[in-house]
Image 1 (cartoon, one colour):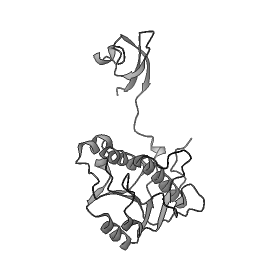
Image 2 (cartoon, one colour; image 1 turned 90 degrees about the vertical axis):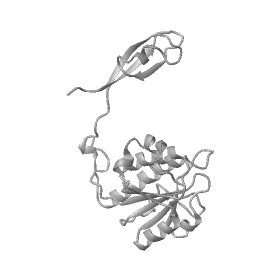
Image 3 (spheres, rainbow, N blue to C red; image 1 turned 135 degrees about the vertical axis):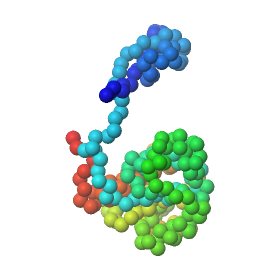
Image 4 (spheres, rainbow, N blue to C red; image 1 turned 30 degrees about the vertical axis):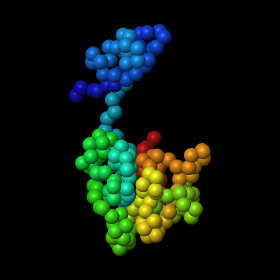
Length: 226
């Protein structure tokens, strides 16, 4: 089998010397994208392969996600890709949240929208009420005064299905959903800004919940062997 490799090029112009990845033999990389001087191949590296089976863990966790009125299709696509990697079991796209039928979502998701189950709901409050009737735990990701901070030992993770609720980039989680939530969680902020990009915040919170839930079930294989 032909092994794929990644190539890295360097500009021949001593005043530029831009170093960048490219594709071997492709005319596009014969010229520097910054100054248009000639380039030369300086390094190669094996291309990424399917993750080793030892790094996969049996998905015993049950974390689902409500995306309520997320405006940015790019953020939604990024969340799809991250959710697939983390092991999220389902996404609910509510309100104005775009679906993978939007080309910007599918472009950023890089195929994750095909492997990760998702559903569209116009009204996030009605969906939250339905999930509560199934005895799911609703956890809102929102920086409210009563929010529990992630990464604290006293933050108990239930073994039942957790539904992480992520709200609008500006307005946050709908108050109607907040009223039904079992817990409100927030990410500690150490800098001058008081919030992360919504896709980044989702990745931090969801990774933590999946890891802690899996660990609570006795799994030690969620992290790769070393």
